[in-house]
Image (cartoon, rainbow, N blue to C red; front, top):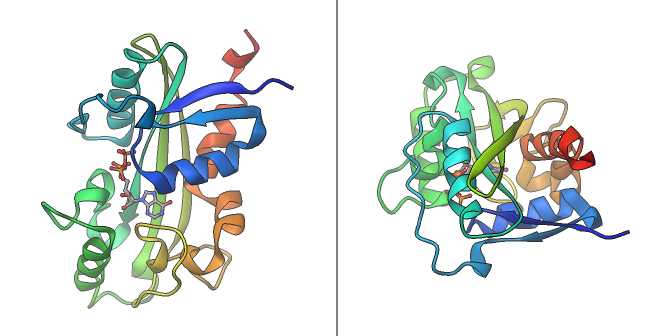
Length: 198
Ligand code: ITT
């Protein structure tokens, strides 16, 4: 079986690791380390879909083949859907995963029980030669707990307990996360895309 080459327009090493794991041997996955000179794409969109398209189209001008970009984040119901598209930059300039988690816990310090409901969302945009061809969505519902648990994964994983489980993504680890995550669901839709058959 020959694998299909796919460039992922990201410099986030955690995302790439998960995408490789989820897609398996059907795809040979590259990241932006193969285009070191590509300028940073400004994420000026107001939706995950817009930002995913911006990142996918930018890389597809510089790579002759299939390109996807992943725009993803956490929506917390009691915060009106924040941090949302700003998930990576939630705590401002110089934000890190750790500073973002600290701010999230601060914002939720007086919020109890069911009101701590949240979901991760992922939108993948598929592009080729400067044109966006399709987008694929995935989400996973869950709850934000009140202190960090676990050391696996990245981003908000130590605070997010997916529905149907008692542990965070950072405790459950890659094998469980990659079967039910927002990213796994969006990638499953990408794998089933009709256009691969053409
Ligand atoms: P690229 O744009 O280069 O892909 P990025 O980290 O800036 O990398 P996004 O703009 O899509 O990516 O922001 C995603 C943020 O949402 C990420 O930095 C995490 O804070 C959070 N996030 C997304 N998926 C996550 C996951 O599976 N687990 C934990 N946090 C996640």
